[in-house]
Image (cartoon, rainbow, N blue to C red):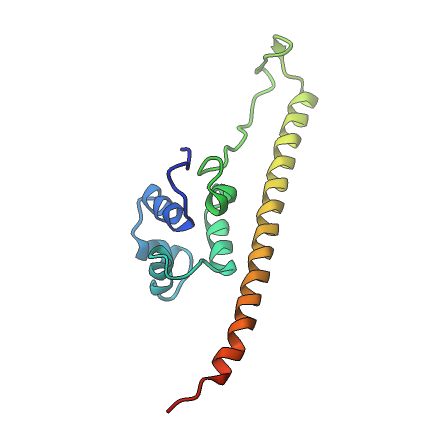
Length: 148
């Protein structure tokens, strides 16, 4: 499914929960959250998903395309390359794929997956830096607040 209508990560998370046919409570349990309030806060747009939350989602739902979740680009799920029998037809040669050709295609596919994951990791690292910056800016404000 194209994600053009889902512009925010909150909408994409809600969509993912619907696709998995789960309630937000059950989804939060699958992610290992002790309390569903964390997820409800994210779904309502009150808080951004943390690095740990995004990592949990990517770990639990290994078929999820993290580029879709983070950026809204591409498909919701990664299209896994099926294991193709060596008798399959190669469109370019009109003949069967040789074992080496099949392995080369699978290597290319796996290299693309690794590259995509590296991009997601880089995006998550950027988010950590931004969040640390926000926290550091808020610390002096919170330290100057005195209780009456």
